Length: 329
Image 1 (cartoon, rainbow, N blue to C red):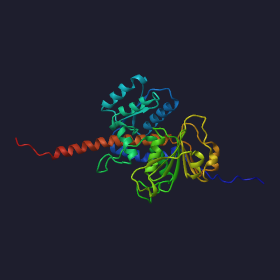
Image 2 (tube, rainbow, N blue to C red; image 1 turned 30 degrees about the vertical axis):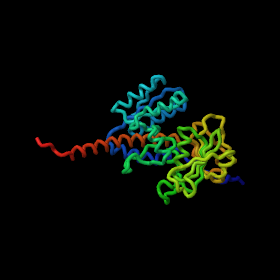
Image 3 (cartoon, rainbow, N blue to C red; image 1 turned 90 degrees about the vertical axis):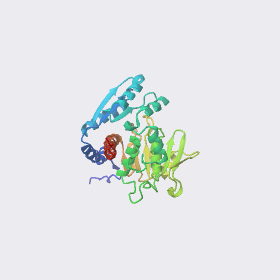
Image 4 (cartoon, rainbow, N blue to C red; image 1 turned 45 degrees about the vertical axis):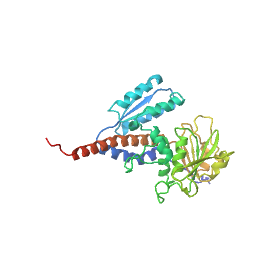
């Protein structure tokens, strides 16, 4: 008699499936715009992950009716190229594939991009709004503040997986969830922890220096998150408490200790390396092995927001002009 293996308890969800759910929104928005927005990408390094991201961006733009131009430049000339693209009226959005200098100079380059073309949401105004939990640029709440692509992509993954509780009010929909984020980089890990905490979760942010907890306090009564150092804590303390674990440690050496996982946890990997081994499926209920395709669709959403915003501003300007009283001759 042939033995039958029990059905797998872990559902593997691929980024492509999640991206398709967002793609329709992008296609519909592009149809209303009636033109192809132009995204300029600057590649000034030899990082294979950056090259892969650039290739994915190009492919996704072409598949969805956007224009994309990849410009490979020397890093010493990048500043001038960014400033020129800022002034080019044909350019709707700009993306730079980091790292460039792997230093504070990269942060300087991020701030060079004009706010109205910063599709990655890395300019100071957007970063300030994100950490302060300010979600709109205007008092009428018509213009959403742009969020960084990969952190927002992970939020979209969690929405797709129904981790966000839509019965709760907007802004509180992660209340009751404990989430561990293994990575505290300024580009992904720290912004992600802030976003999730501002949406109501208790977030444990982990890097080589230790563990920090991001929360909006008891009963999520605070308007934005606070950060508390968890002295002496390690993954062994926070992972067993977490119903969601998100890892993005670069490099091949790191492997997440899956034996620490809570039974039925949701696991998401956003590193170009596989942080989770195959044994993750023995403990997790849902496993998302990558988020890259979702990140690129989010990038196009941000680009579409900018292109559409220009149309709205132009329309508003024409309305104002038409309302001006006629001068007596």
